[in-house]
Image (cartoon, rainbow, N blue to C red; front, side, top):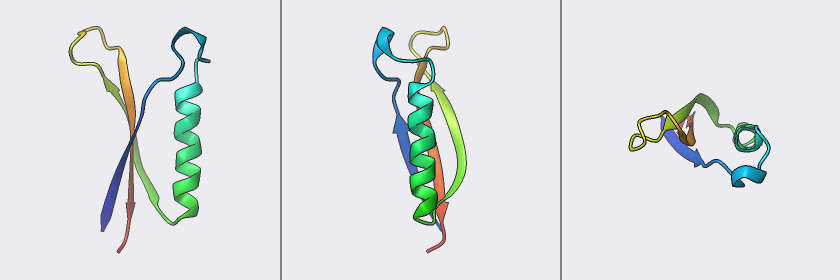
Length: 66
């Protein structure tokens, strides 16, 4: 079994829509599924340095059988 991890950072600062980064996650999930990869999990990774729970990025985890 093979795993792949893809990070998706928040986009556009104040001009971005509220769901722009997550919409990008959905697009990646659909593309990888079409290539035979199975979604394992989407993790919202927090910024550990700020201590206030700000989103650092999303990590999307996929798996595929070799």
